[in-house]
Length: 126
Image (cartoon, rainbow, N blue to C red; front, side, top):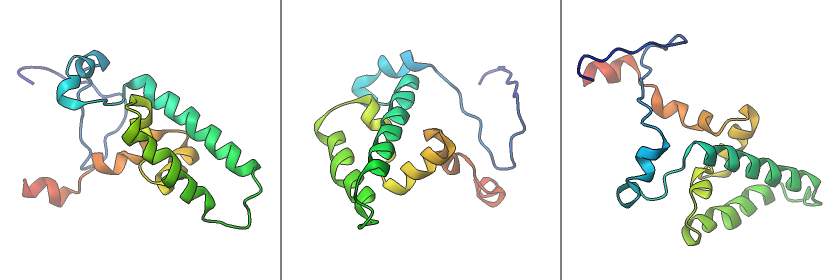
């Protein structure tokens, strides 16, 4: 922005975008506009919740039905977002397959990365 400079600490891939971190307080002060946008710590808490969910599923006796974890996630955790207004619940991946990716990388942000990288063709068309 206006005569500002940016320093990066790692290589940015072609098509990668830079994002400005306004800090959690920027979203908190605009809750009427943005709702319960997850804050930094909410992603940490959501990842802990995912780990606990995954551990309970692995300890369960539901090996007979391979779709059980996905159905439980979709039928239990996701509907909670609609009835319980929580920044932490809003930080959860919206589908079970994304939850598995987040668990594999130990980072919920991993599921958002594809949305932050554009092809060179896309950038040139803009």
